Length: 395
Image 1 (cartoon, rainbow, N blue to C red):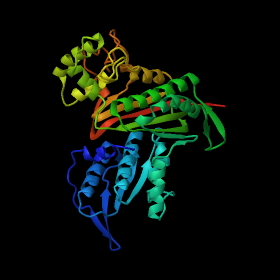
Image 2: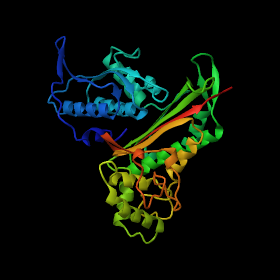
Image 3: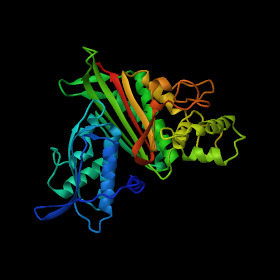
Image 4: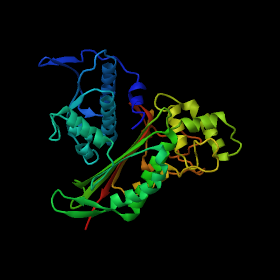
């Protein structure tokens, strides 16, 4: 996967000291986690540590002692995978100590390539070359089994996007659970098709905005119960889409609207009017990058320089169509440090056909504070974390 190096080089990292340890006369660098959650704070601490390691004049083995943690969301451990992969490619030997406490939407970490490097996992091998080879293989592995789907899609293979949707439909239609008794699980077929189309649109959109490889990772968990829904079982479709790039998600639309002639399109002119209105409200919670990310996900808005009449189908509309089938969901996108949360009640189109992430309008009102976030990690490019909890039908 290209451009992972930007995840380390783009950070404003603080220098970490006292990281060199000696055990049985062997020296190594150790990261010791002091938190109980694998989230952006922990990931930022790991990035600071790894940048400090890179700045050392000697190259020694690295131990990431993360300990017992609750996994905040799928994207957190996928980003950790990317950091470990980058350090391995730089020639460092990496091991981890990790006891993940996962839930319905983060159970996929049990099948993460990280487990091959985890000293506390049954998948760990004492042979350094063997475990690192297994990690690299499964990081880049094209997989489609009953509970996991993973693809690395490059801009050169855009023709694959046309096949991706049908491949995802097949994956989602063929779900099996083996924990107790062999059983087949079905999801609403209309939802399956909408979900496959949405994932394909997100992958294509990430490639268009970032011009780099796109990592797609999906895991499905089954057979969870709900304290208020006795006698019913639930599963989750957990999705991460990740693209590292020197171009952030809103950059192309920002450049197009601020630096080109907009007389060709009334819709782009309205985005400029909205920008003039919103910028007077920019603050620590809602900034200019938030605005351009929001502008870039609108229906019929494209960052392509000569395209003023066509744009992708609004992603929020696609995500909302899936939310209509879900029991619960937790969805957001992230570019740079800025986060947009896809809350169902805030994804309604206004009279102008825009979505403002508020209950009023995009052109005249800023997003609700509950739909915004600022991460401690700077993510160069764009990433999506989508968790859909669905009631399961057994056949």
